[in-house]
Image (tube, rainbow, N blue to C red; front, top):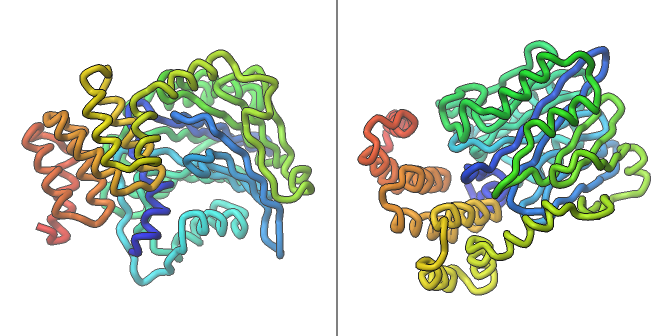
Length: 401
């Protein structure tokens, strides 16, 4: 795999999310109506919605995401929707005999421009080498109500979990292997959404809004935006910073007439809420934000020096480093991600999650020997760690050691 390709993919797909970072995706179909709801939880508020009209016989589509972290989900004019959840760990086995992709963005553009259904999408996936697939699972839903959550199972094989019944919910644990690689399992968001969908009397946008409100998140990684996609009528309802009382509504056909364009999500609403302003003020003062800015402007060495100068005075140092690692990984800053992850294990040598995270990063980079060193350190601290045992067992079967 070329390093440049991996950097692009890592920026979008290395989402072994830190702390309480999470997203909730769910869909339901009834009486010809198909709705999808999504809460996007992150530590940034530079959210955007982009519109790309149909051209040269290809479908038009829109994406929702962030300037800083890229696209997170979207839908096309045929009613095909996608959005993804991060997992703590998963890795797809490579299939060298299949077609290669140019980049993740190229591939998702191809999906949105050429696929009109979940079956189209699965057929396309089967043609390509998915060895780049990272720690995530993706929910795809189409206008017929078909739904599938797609990711890697614990053996590295393609996993397709299809919807059974009227609805399907996906949060930050693998639907194929719930206890393997989970960020949160059991997951209260998953349980609440399932219960509300099970007890749903009528499928409406308003009821989906209530589910989004019930499972939204606050704190360090709050629900930054939420969207409800009506796949039947090709409409999008957008909410900003877990404010579910104000909505911006879009019709894809109407937006495509305006040509290619985008909107800052905050600009679509009359004002920022007190909660959003307070969050942004706190973010500016956090050490993780200051160190990230230092890395981007002055380099990793200057950031580590600043960390050493600040650590005696700063509180919640572990979580600050974790947030920094997460931000760097999403930006595709591989060297800096590794250096800060190494710093974390030096500062917190008895942290299981620190050594595990460093092992996961090395494994994604193809440095199995370094990964094994980190995983063995985890087992020294926790000899019964089933997840790491499973990873090492898989590496042993590949004759890595």
